[in-house]
Length: 408
Image: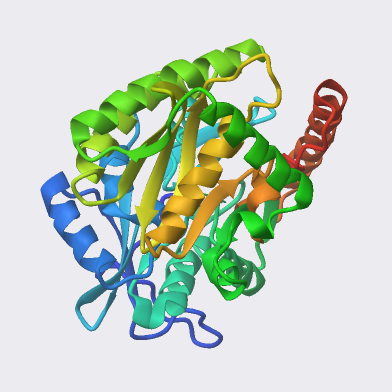
């Protein structure tokens, strides 16, 4: 059976006699992807009317589409109301086999099914929707897709916003489909409203041990010379910081016996393009922390709707464990964002290390699949859960810290 959604002559969802979850004035249709210039115009116009995340902005979506792997055939899901575009999403169909045997087709929401390319890590995922009725549009588009899933087919929804996850749960209830939790995670951030309400002293609000570690590390670095937090001001400077971040990032991960993000062949070209296009829009912020002219660390952050999102970092670790290059780099970047009048500093998913020590806010971020209730899907969920529990136990035994639950 095919996952390809059936469209009627006008490409819209036909009205059900009773109980329709799709508002009568929102029409949903699936189209081949238009040309990049045409799509860019439509996407950015709707983006100006939305409250979307950075990962649904054209700054991210444009480079993502421009460098898709061969064999990926993205489709554009469009919602209209009264002739006006009110919702957009990119969907990639993917054929897979459960247990290596059972054929299954998936719709991937802003992902491809290519494991390497999807390690670019889409987060705060959902539907690009007009802010006036974002919930209704998201419901209509997900319900349109859910109503066309058959047999072993499913809709893959990764890294969802809370609003998108709530919509997916409503659709599951209406269609009778099951919603499976593939990865349970959460995002943590520093809410500057809380910091400002307490007097504006970020460090003063940290735990005693964390604050002492930050201040001690800062004193040790200052003993080497001037301590500087510098934000790149040009594309060339940002790309230079990105290259130097790579060296430190890879060295740190390889020292722990892991490959690091830059081992992914898609990672470097994608982000060089994103930086080149995002810097002029003010959507990319690369910074360097140095002591006595020597690099302490580099941070690669996004800036969207007055929110700073920490994406990647590279730090100069040393044998002296009193030196905390990552912790200090983040604290200086947080204090810089606070001084700029921004709203928050978001560490995004997978709480670990410094993130829970510095954050004062948190919310779930989950990876889900929506599809018909089938025995094969239930069995696959059990296998995935068992594998996640085993992986979690290994992480605890090898690293000595409680890793967040994965793969459940």
